[in-house]
Length: 571
Ligand code: ATP
Ligand code: MG
Image (cartoon, rainbow, N blue to C red):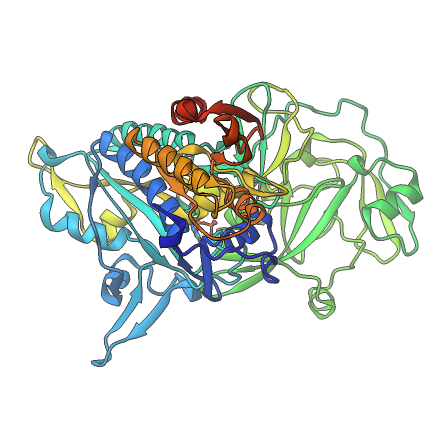
């Protein structure tokens, strides 16, 4: 392909609404164009990368006996009512009504549709296991679309669904998909971790998220550098074998005027924040009600909202600091403690039960309690794990210190079990002719998010540094000065030779200045650039490797072979 035939609208200026580097670069390199909030057009180079990622996904899925299908984007409300999700999916679901007043949505995911297909045609154990996938646009009216393709409202997703006879079958399939996903992200050249994640109502060790490590990532994860443990903080466990062994001292009520935060109280009393109890007030929302809950964690810790939500079985929780609420609940802001607190629901983080002689609010303005001990001074009905595990906490598997990182979820594998097959009547007859629900798994990869995550991980001052496997072109050939015929001829020759060798190569036949051509090639980030320039007088051309910035001079006759050799060594 030649640049004269391609739409590559590179920009010098950074778009004002692009907050993170990868978003800026995708727009500046002319890969995507925003149409409206969270909705993007993929331009030729961007779409080429998307197709390369999709092809890797296809290859890895087909290798594992998954079958590609294409399901409708338009989905009838009735199907979603059958699964029970029409009323709970909320505002993210893009709903519409047709001219006959029938309700529909644009698919944000396809569990309902695939279950409908499978229940219609699969009825015997002989047809199982079965694994179906598609690569298609998804629609979600995200509360906060942002960061370009990372959180958009229309996005390309590979979504797959597996159907097994039983849990053991699902376990095997899950492992196959986990390995497949690892192979995909390896081939895309990403640095990632598969982390244990929260599986909401389903519970158990039922899902892994594939996280690309990135400062700008929306998810917080912890991992153990000594063993393989890694988890989303929504789910992270830590070692809790430590128990205070000191003697329990006599509880004391102390005056702490205006000292409200953990930092203030600890400083005032000269105590360690780790030896105190922090109180946090949350509002929990259920299907038909709401309640306020006080959560207690160790003084130096934060609580995790997803853990709280799961502990309560709530639909959502948020922190509530509204004065009026606090007054109505009859609690003392800044002086809340677990001793004698019986007018509100309390969640107590388990760690507190292992510590001794703690400081906490006395539920009375300007007073705290010292030497408070669980069991002796207070008890709690709901002892839970709601703490946010952080760097330095110990790994529950091997006791090494955990490390914190941020990540962007590019893929997820999930054991669904029989949630959809039971609600939608997807059953099969087993070896004994007995009807059983199909046991399902689902598996998703954001193709656009993966493309952008790669850019977020691989870039420098000049622009993008594509891994070879997903680069828009593997190599670009540039005649330095388009008016010098011998340079144009040499470039054309190398271009032809590389094409014959099967390299995905671009010839820059534009009329731009040398500097502009160079800058664009580095902004777009082709892995290898071959320039026919001044040195052609000595029969030489230059090969430049984008990732290492290495430049080498080679005789024109050897240029394509050498470039191919270099490409073969690149990831
Ligand atoms: P998130 O927690 O980031 O909202 P999710 O858990 O809702 O994602 P899934 O339903 O698991 O997402 O979707 C599978 C994959 O689709 C994700 O791993 C991600 O790569 C991609 N994806 C999800 N939402 C978006 C979005 N709004 N924009 C782009 N890609 C997305
Ligand atoms: Mg997910």
